[in-house]
Image 1 (cartoon, rainbow, N blue to C red):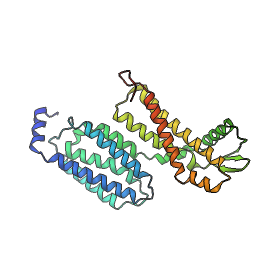
Image 2: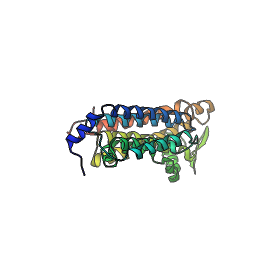
Image 3: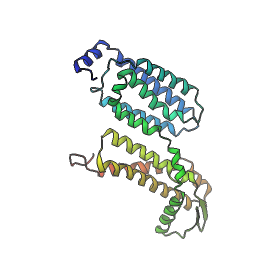
Image 4: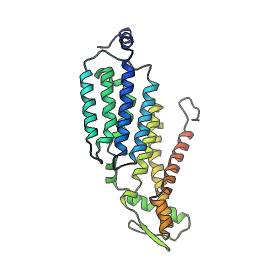
Length: 279
């Protein structure tokens, strides 16, 4: 049974503070989640969490005129779910996967409070965003891109004129050698770009072949950028101090920036649905 538009408007007007309370609770949950992530063993989740929360807020803000409060019976269910999420979050282990699931469960609980089970469909875009964030991306390490990464980096070094020798996961140059481990296979770079690409296609409602082109392009760019990074590390293998800067220091962030810039160029090169180019 669908509520009449006038009845929905009457309900919203009869509860002028309802949306304010929902926004206040939502902001409190965002701050609590970011604090919990900051205290965890995975500080790299903090920027990702901030970006996905911001994208979700933008998604809900752009749809604010279409979101409606409804008279429903799921209020207690939403409150109980929210209380359970907060309790579990405060008692989470530092490396707990629940920290990535936290935002999605908060969104579901607030959606139930606002619109009930039948109203969940209107939060589809926001659910897509936080659902992507909640996926266990560590499982991609089971695919083991190490062989491909080693081969790509070796090929790049050969194209640049270096006398390089590859044996298994080892890339050897006359001055030194490095061994490529699974953690350096590019999974993190790929997932970071996939996240940004997913945010873009969700917020812009990209459809069809263009959507898949953006997502596949993000995977390719992340893999290529990491291959360039590994090739540079091989070149610097004879200089331990410089190698540390580019491997674990601030230098490694430049390749993340390079990957984001390449993804931005890809998005700028794609025509919009009106036949124009993104600007």
